[in-house]
Each structure stands twice: as structure tokens, then as C-alpha cells.
Image (cartoon, rainbow, N blue to C red; front, side, top):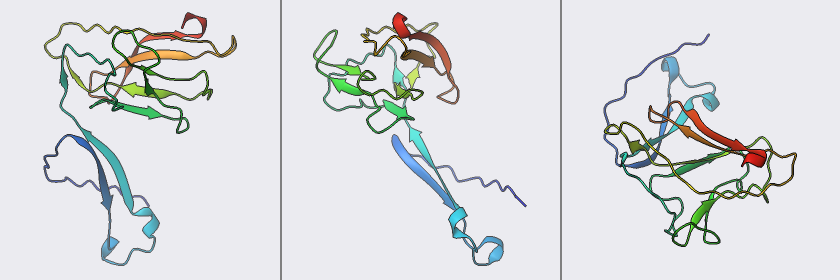
Length: 166
């Protein structure tokens, strides 16, 4: 029998950053827990202040990721975005994803900007420069831009290039 209980936690003010919320039970039904392997749950919580527009990032700082940025991958540890000084449009650096030398078909790696406060804007434009090299004609590497209007609860794809069009 599964029973769901809802607990309302007291209001807590956190500074910006990433935190782990961990919930666990002790003495279920007033007696010792017979299976302690299933009584704990954790979730990562990020707190940030939205950045104002206009927003620009040139990846010039040697600290990567820039403040407020994040990345997520379902690939291996090396399947990630990184800062490079081997190419740039202006300045000395840029960001890259080396899928040419690190091919993991079916995997993805997200690079996310900080939250942006666009409440005073009637439209938003995104501009970027890119370079790509095909691994072979059968591999369809893809670059997509996704946007969220609800602080990351859901995303909508607004741009996509793949294969030889990339």
C-alpha cells in the first residue's frame, strides 16, 4: 500500500547558489524503520537572481562556467561544453563543444544561460557565431536553442540546425 503525505515546510530565505534539500523519515508509524534504504529523498535546488537585459557573455574569464550559467549532459564526464582560447569572434575566448573528437550518438549536452529578466521587453533577440566540422556524412550532429518562459519548468525549441546545414 502506498500512502502519500504532503508536508509544508516553513519559509526559508536562501542566498544565491545551489543547495541540496534532503528529506527523510524516522520511526515510521511510531516504530523502528524495517527498511532504511527507502526512507530518504534528495533534490537539488538552485536560487538565482535573474540577470537584466541586455545580456552578453564572451567567455573571457578563465573561470568556467560564468556565474549563473550551468550545464547538463546525459553523456560521459568529458561530454561537456568548455572554454577555449583557440578561437573567438571578439576578445580572446569562446565556448566550444567538441563532438568531433568526443562522439556519443544519442547523447546531449545542455549549456544554460542564467535566468534573464525579460518582463520589460516586448521581444528578445539572440545572436551568436558558430563553427562546425562534420565527423562524416552519416552523423547528424545537432545544435538547438531552447527557451523557457517559466523559469525552466518547461522548454520550447526555437532554433535548430543539424548535419550539413550546421
